[in-house]
Structures are given as structure tokens and as C-alpha cells.
Length: 254
Ligand SMILES: C[S@@+](CC[C@H](N)C(=O)[O-])C[C@H]1O[C@@H](n2cnc3c(N)ncnc32)[C@H](O)[C@@H]1O
Image (cartoon, rainbow, N blue to C red; front, side, top):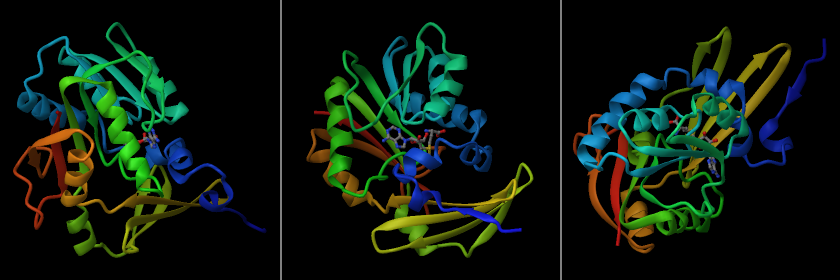
């Protein structure tokens, strides 16, 4: 049998982040990143931020809305926004008074909405080829925030990821063997994901800029933000470049 090979990241005209995150396979592979993880992390963040109940918050790149739902359960008015139509249509099943979801590109300003806080969680940044696009995201967030508004970015600790690149591995989820190999090309962390399903071979590449603390400091401070605090994991231990898994930044609109 001649096997049909589909190299989506090459053939698909869409950027990798517009196609991969919109597939059921992405959600299957990351299904352990679930609501309970979101509840614990968002609970810790909200304790730290001390946002008054009723505050307007944006979950930017919300996926299926696990952090949005948690934020809403804590008493905030939440908008979840994501580029993936499939994720937003799944999220919309949980929409209710004070919890809405929209398809939206994070580089743009959402017309007629402002927020007291914007959350960008679980490495949902650094996807674009041109780093000027990063600035577009930061400036759009700045425009949408009220004065003194807060911006939370949860990113990987790229320096640790690069230093501890794991050998290729196989992860089996939902009966599918995902073959995963991570590499660093000097600018991006690349995660090659190959698998077969229903007689077809698939190959996606996650391509995320290896942004470090200094990159975020520059991006944020040059675009109207002051960094208030940084943390290194979902329990909000201090950031330590040598050991932390995450780089979590809390910034305030100047
Ligand atoms: C790693 S996932 C994280 C999703 C969610 N924050 C979570 O933790 O479940 C990254 C998300 O960014 C979204 N995304 C990618 N590019 C985007 C863009 N340009 N504008 C808005 N969302 C985007 C993807 O569709 C995906 O849902």
C-alpha cells in the first residue's frame, strides 16, 4: 500500500501555529494539561495579583478555555480569545454570563474592549517568524489594558530547555504513538511531532522563539510596561534561571 504522507507544516499555507493548534491531535497530545492544573496555577496567580472581584480579564490565546473558566469561577468577567476556531467553538460550550469566547489574533487589538488584567498562559508567545510581531502583541495588550493594568506572561524557561534538551521520545495517547524530538537552532526551540493515524502520516513542527528574561525585559519595558515580579513555576517559587521550568512575568502598564 502506498502510504499517503502529509507534511502539513510545508504544504499548508497557514502558519504552523494556525494549523497545529486547531487539530484534535494537539488536544489529544496535551490532554494532561487540564482544568485541575489550570485551577491550581490561576488560584496562585490571583492570590498574588489581588485583583478585585468583578475585574475584567482577558485570557489571550485561551485554547479551549481552561484558565478562562477558572478565572470566571473566581469572580472575574472573562473574555477568552484564541486564533483556533475549533478551540473557541469547544470553549463556547461553557460560555455564560461574564464568560465569553472569541476567535481573535493576539497581534490585534480587540475593538471596544478594555481589561484590568491580561493573561497569556502556557507558552502562548513567540510563535512568529518576525520578532516585530512580538512587539505587536505587547503593544496591543498595552492598548487594551486600563491604566495600571496587569499583564501576566507564562513562558518556558528557554535557557533550561536548551541546556537539558531531552533525547527523542515516544508518547502514546488515545492509541496514537507520537514521536517527539526537540531541537534548538540558535533562535527557536523546535518540537518535531510525527505520528500515524488512519493510514496517514503526519508531521508538525512547533517553532517557538527561545525568548529569555532579557528579551522579555526589553520587549516589556520598551513597550510601556514595568516588570513587577517574576516566578519560576506554577506554585510561584522565585525564578531561578538554573533550575526553574517556567518564566512567569507579572508586568504593569506604565
Ligand atoms: C500552547 S497553547 C495554550 C492554550 C491555553 N493557554 C492553555 O493553556 O490551554 C497556545 C495557544 O495559542 C493559540 N494561538 C496561536 N497563535 C495565536 C495567535 N496569533 N493569536 C491568538 N491565539 C493564538 C493557539 O491556537 C493555542 O490555543
